[in-house]
Length: 283
Image (cartoon, rainbow, N blue to C red):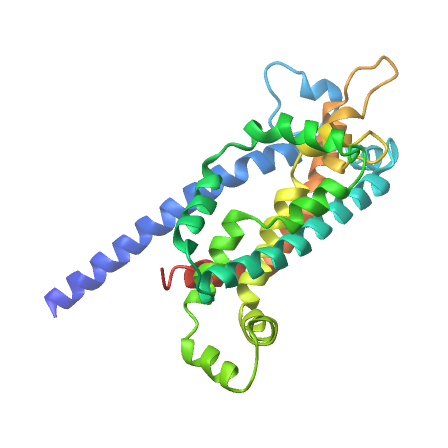
């Protein structure tokens, strides 16, 4: 009984330490967002006050009203939604098709090609920024949404890896049975493998939507101010009559900008965790 009690006490102590560590990490990760919310509720004078005012004396909810009315917030929001959704849908299905090919099809050089694909993940995106702009400029695609369509059709190496790992873990007997019934690989992918990959599909949609929703460089480089996204509009707008930026109004707009993605993640996090857990079942 003494040993059993000691083991129980040790497990409870370990669990307590784990929860304490998770709470500390949660505070560290949530800290910047909480600071942003507090900044959105401050007066302009409190923002520049020294010493720093951690809490606003009187919450100024008008900052959120100003964030919605000082610019065409809904139009920029629509641009962001359109680009993010278009890219997310296209890159998800193109990555699923490429991942299926790497997982289930045979061909010479498939493994080296997959290694090259993964190696492209190591290239910083800043290296391809200027060549990409020059290419799209010569093709006449600047100030249009076609670059996002082309990026979506080109697939994403990381998402290809996720789909490849998931499809490789599906028993081959299921594929063989479909081939015996007369299905080609196109129907096998569309009718069998794609429905089975629902957790990875949702995760891919979530990740790609978030990538494009938070992207600042590409819209600022390729789009004019009338067709740009909300992330660019927030940083370039919200000024007083003297031309000075209004940081508290920008903070309020940033809160409104972040909340939709947070809500999407909260409702889909179980699928995200499930897909990450299953993506490493088979190499």
